[in-house]
Image 1: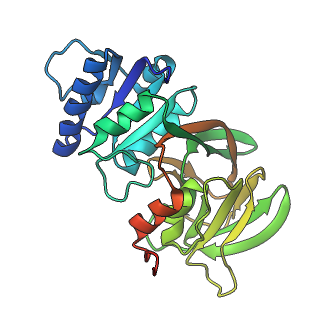
Image 2: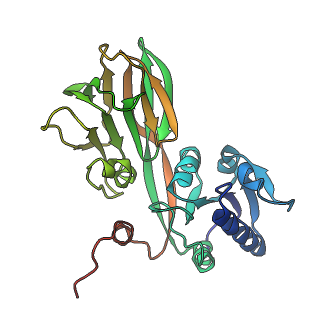
Length: 292
């Protein structure tokens, strides 16, 4: 049996399908006798029902298990906060691809029954910590589950920067930007940019140039324990940005330095017992099945 007694539920507000799943899961959890904490924005979709209501930080502090209803975007937003706490996280897929949300919204009950019975897999996914330094002092920072992306503040603007790994100069580049992705993020923006898929157990990062002004620049995979440093050229005339999971944007000025490294926080993902990463890839990416 699992030790999941206090359950946090995080929804996808204003999505009718997600709200349908939210109500069904709350009914299920009440029948199990769990203490339930509903994330405050999701709770607005409910009529008074006696559930505890809290923000995501409070859910992280109190819950043994967090159930996120939505797509990968919903999971990413919650995961950046929940990774700071020792809380297990499972997703109910009410999005599109759903690489991080495993549970079937139409058949979640037997899957959750197994999870409460202790029949599940746990997987640790590392995050990235991104820091922007200006005149030698940290100006801003944030974390990401998928990727950190340096890009221009305006569309179709070439930018100049240098890349260092562990203080070793790697290359200078004129391009639309650079994607630095975790194995989790290798099936997201990085994949769209032509980067390789990294299996989640790899302790590695992938750097993917975005439309480089040279034919010789290619994606590169590096040790995840490295520190990636991007030095933004003073020659850039516009304000740049670094985006964390496409949710949080940090402002970058010409001459700033960006340091990206593995975060100390880890996301504890819960999967059904029959979870197989390669099956997920086949299903989500439309790969061929066995010949015989």
